[in-house]
Image 1 (tube, rainbow, N blue to C red):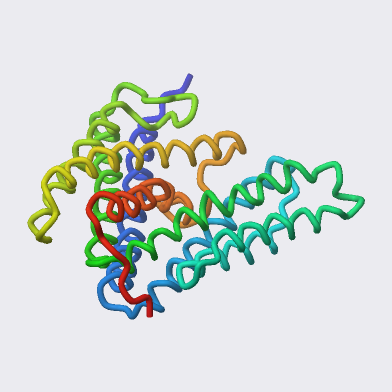
Image 2: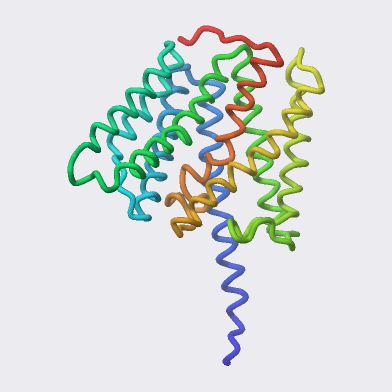
Length: 284
């Protein structure tokens, strides 16, 4: 075997390039989210949530098609776009009912009968998994101090992700669940968990009236749910044999950026309304 003295240097250079792309695109999306959360009108925030949701849903359907599953992407994306509008009226259950009915009616076509079960199930699952779960970001935004709580969720979840990424790359030795995500390590998972708790507790300096215990509970649960959300998407990607859900340099895809939020956002909404006692404000 011929020794290549430049191989190690090439690998290191490729890693630096990937990190640079990751940091550049992360800076862009952080700036966009900062504007949408803190400075933009509510309608712009809602449009941003819709855009991210539909892009992620489209990526999910693209991955499902790699398994040979027929997906009615048009109907899926239409109802995925409609479902978040239920925040403005009490019609969420009606939208879900119409979605399922329309998908079944579409599958009445003779040529689709052999795939109707899995086609309908996966199409509807994508709507629930992405469009419905992510729509809770808008519901949080319309709570009392909603701007703060949206920023809180993003900071706790994403700073936890960041801690896991760097600690895992620098110090990670023991794989977490190699059959699902071979690059995730126990060291990175612990770093994510600790960082989530620390960031959550630090949020207490920026808002009054929220007890220390609430922030501690939220930090602990979000530190776990964010990693479960990441692993859930990794499980899907492993099943369809893809590395990334999309083609954003350094970040993968929109679903890759959102996966850790899909479980943390709904939990935070329900916790804030049930235990902290926050109520919705004007939605317009």
